[in-house]
Amino acid sequence: MPLTPDQLAEIEAARAEPQPTLRAVSPGMEAHLYKAVPVLDHGFVRVIDYMGDDAAIVQAARVSYGAGTKKARDDSGLIRYLMRHWHSTPFEMCEVKLHVKLPVFVARQWIRHRTANVNEYSARYSILDREFYIPEPEALAAQSTVNNQGRGAVLEGAEAARVLEMLKADAGRAYDHYEAMLSQDGQQGLARELARMNLPANIYTQWYWKTDLHNLFHFLRLRADAHAQYEIRVYAEAIAAMVKDWVPAAYGAFEDYRMGGVTLSAKGVEVLRRRLAGEAVTQETSGMSKGEWREFEEVFG
Image 1 (cartoon, rainbow, N blue to C red):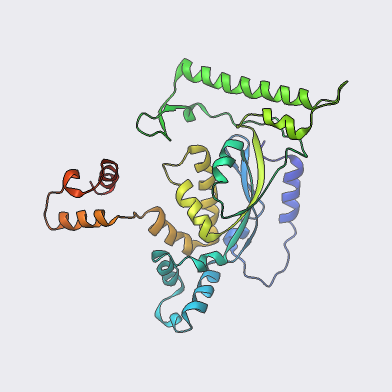
Image 2: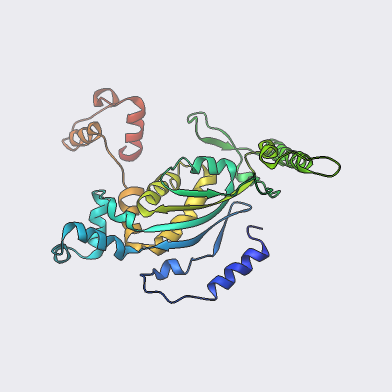
């Protein structure tokens, strides 16, 4: 169960008592506030608080550009201009605070995005629950033969069953030993800060994660991408759905220019110009490495 009955009751109580406010609110984000979206087998992500909306981005931009900008383009057009030219500061005027429950190995990927404020559940003070991420069979895949960071074909039959059994058995055994080390039944018991080191990387942790919209877009561009690891990608996709409702104009521009767009090197631009002029350009005559050429061909081949 992603949330305990007490946590669900707390959420319902918070949503049942809306407070009057003079600050700007986003109706789309208000609909998400406090609710937990299940992710993986025991995880979730939910919005705890947020600040700003599409209008806050426009407001900040017009402070920089001056009042005359209003006559030149509407709000949506201005947001698209900012995204297109990556004038990122106005997007930093919006912030969001998330409560996330996730496996430790996913958290270690996530924390590499160092542009956020984080406070994590402490296993020095509290005892972690017996909850582990065990992949669905379709998420079990062999190592890719062409990408050292990726997956290949899905494991099937006896091989998949063997791997799942090892994952479950190892996680259960490690937690049994964790509890035994903590136990004070007839013994002193090991300190929590030491006993935790025996736990596997698929055990669940929780944290509060607060970031601004500019850095959140960077997170989503990397982690909601089809090439991202599945276990972090599903969290990014859940967050992206919330952001789309929170700042629809900004998210639309982000989808168009960042998620759906491509970045070309100077060599890539030159190859396109030569092709448009009718020249047959090959990898050998492009000046690109084999890897660069392969990536170029994936988009323009």
